[in-house]
Length: 270
Image (tube, rainbow, N blue to C red; front, side):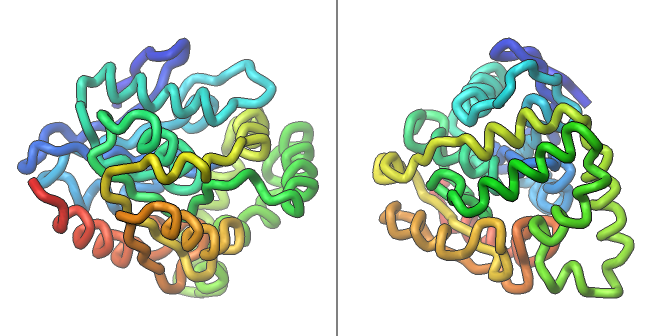
């Protein structure tokens, strides 16, 4: 799969090539994961759409970064540079959690590049102060002692109680926990960027394109009230709740997410 040099870094991305509609959907992943968290959505949409999923700098298969805190402004600039370098024009930009931070900035600041937005388990606000000490402690342990020591604490943050408690999904849980523990040690730089991020709620009224907001009903990392707050600030948005999903609905409930994507994308004018 290809890499591209943009904005002073090298990003890994997956590209399914032209689809029947001539439109492009980009998937931007959540913190600690990579493009693979959208495998079910890519398989579902390819053929109809050109689907691109990429890894953020300092994560997945993209290049590392020397910054103490990889800011959301830098990650947003990477997304803009990727779209422009690939000459995609206006895209359907789907972001989950951290990817949603990117998507909201794109919609508010570069309307020429945003055909629509899909905001999944994300927030327009800074990290809640009550979460910061816990996340900094976990990040400190992960940096110096490895992610294996914190995986047991992080998994219930990332996934719903239904996913974590279902015996039939034990193999899936093992897969994602192994993926979590295999993150590079320098992932702490990206974690700092998420913890330190500035809010963009005041920018939301500037988003003029259609917006789908998704909320996992069992999400404890970014509670559904955060999605409702985004929905209320963007008049042309619609809100969909994903039952039995936590902070990683694309993995936990892929069929429900795909159904919501089909309904939203299918409702947009050609």
